[in-house]
View 1 (tube, helix red, strand yellow):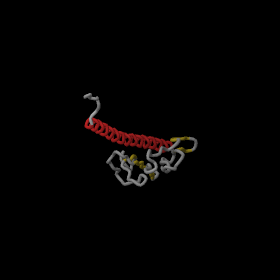
View 2 (tube, helix red, strand yellow):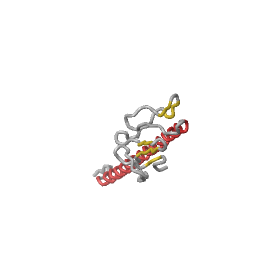
View 3 (cartoon, rainbow, N blue to C red):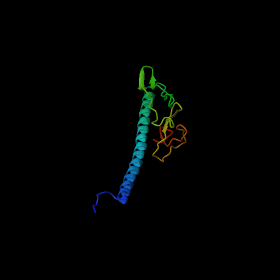
View 4 (cartoon, rainbow, N blue to C red):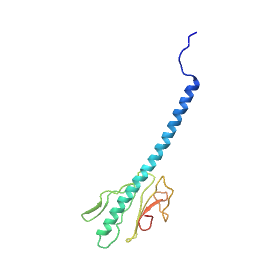
Length: 143
């Protein structure tokens, strides 16, 4: 009787189970890294907008903050006369469901975003495209 070299059914099932577990772990890690990456972009975008808003106010004779809207369809930037402070306003990485928040009273402002991997909240409730912002900058929000 000749014996052929082959894998048993149990060996194949063990290998398939290990591959399945590694694939699931990789998918979960990838999803978490994607959320963290989008959150880092949101924070960088808000900081860029905040810097432009502050430069606008410091150069403005009335010492007021600019008025503009943040939405998925908004175009343009922040400028006054021939001075451009921000050539194009960044949009949320998931702009179809989330948007950034901006509000000004002339002498104060608040910028907000919804961070996917954060449980913190702003000091007040602001809408970031249908969800509540949980990351805010400016005198009215967290710094």
